[in-house]
Amino acid sequence: MFAAAIEINGGPEAFQYIEMPDPVCPDDGLVIDVEAISIEGGDLLARAMSPLKIVPHVVGYIAAGTVVEVGNAVTTRKVGERVVTLHGDGSHATRRAVSAAMAWPIPDGVSTQDAACVPVAFGTAFECLFTAGDLQPGQTVLIHAGSGGVGMAAIQMAKLAGATVIATASSADKLERLKAFGMDHGIDYATEDFVKATQKLAGPKGVDLVIDSVGGKTLADSVKVLGWRGRLISVGIAARGGSSVDAFSLWARNNTLHGVLLATALRAEYPRSFAMIGECLARVASGELKVQIAKVFPLSGAAAAHAYIEGRHAFGRVVMTTG
Image (cartoon, rainbow, N blue to C red; front, side, top):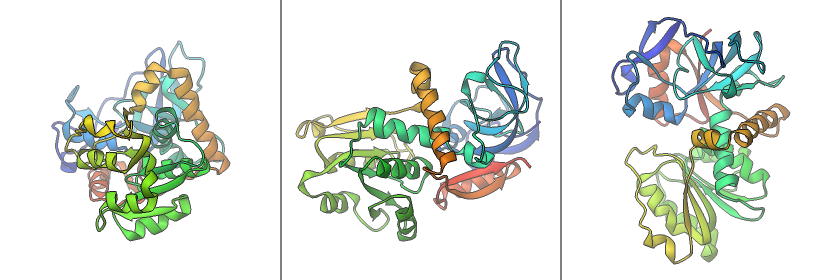
């Protein structure tokens, strides 16, 4: 197989496009011919700073394609089936081996590229909004980084659930385009103070829920816009500056800070979480939820694809293909 692999942590230029041995199919797993790879925020962090298990190391959470081999103990998947797979690494390659428990069948009518964009982004958005955030109809939610994968999924889900949706993005153009996904009010964080803008929009009542994938100062400042018993969900550190919230700041309005990581939910609550992601795929197949792909790169262009995301150019998902 061929892979975009790294030998040291670093920027996008750390990638090398090289030939590597094909993966071995585990007894409880499967091997797929990869067709589409959705680049996740965690992939960027893994490339930049996560300790390497082996060298060369293939990063990447999500890959979708066709099953070419199944393990002896597998009865749930079959050769020739289209699936989307999730694992902590290994997606940036033309072949991938994963546990069959982390493979979802792709519904008819859903492209392999769209399917690759669903499990992490839509699954994480659901966990933030409903499992952790307990969003209810009529409430108000602030979604940071609205034009990213999790943000765009969260905007759609929150609007369909009957919430008022405020979102931040890095340009007026992105905010204008987010209206089609259900955003009610937009804040250009490049030119506006999101705290003042949100307080003006929400009024004295504040917002009920904040979804933050940025971290750092954005996370700490988000406490200021919460209303009574408001919930702040921390789901990423895209700013790479760490995150620090003074516990005292949560007390006055009985606010809560809740962390979300989809991977741990899948381990601790597998039946529920696996089914939830399957439902997200079904909602994409029905047209209720939409996948927005910003740009498609070849796998050999992994460095350019990662640089494109880190340059904040993307509106939606960035996908790599092996064809």
